[in-house]
Length: 155
Image 1: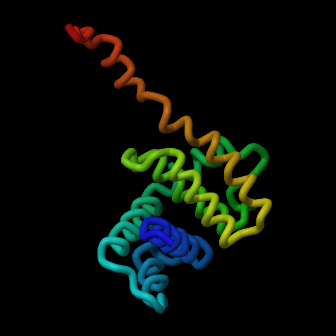
Image 2 (image 1 turned 90 degrees about the vertical axis):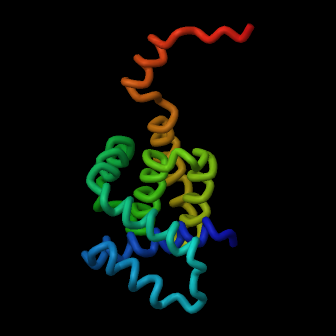
């Protein structure tokens, strides 16, 4: 398993612990990484910590974005694993522009496949497919700036 996937799995585990036990994010992350039998290298640990703490900090916004796309599914009715995988992937789609959309979705599906029910992969994939438009749509300010920018002359 790659280091980035491992970092995402640890981040999802920390989000899960924080979610189901109402534990603060930093404490949940410490719990998850403390029990790990094979310690993460420093870079993987830091990437995982950044994912978990930044996603947790934007939980209300991420939940709203997910809820808008999860037709007939309240957040509290989703399986906790699925809900937290969606939160992490939504955070990456919104805030981690350095990671390609396909990678974010593929990683989320593989994590769900590992930690949740097989049918959850279709559910999560459907919501992430709707969420990916967050990345593809230019922001209103950028669209206006691009429209007013002078044309480039290649000659």
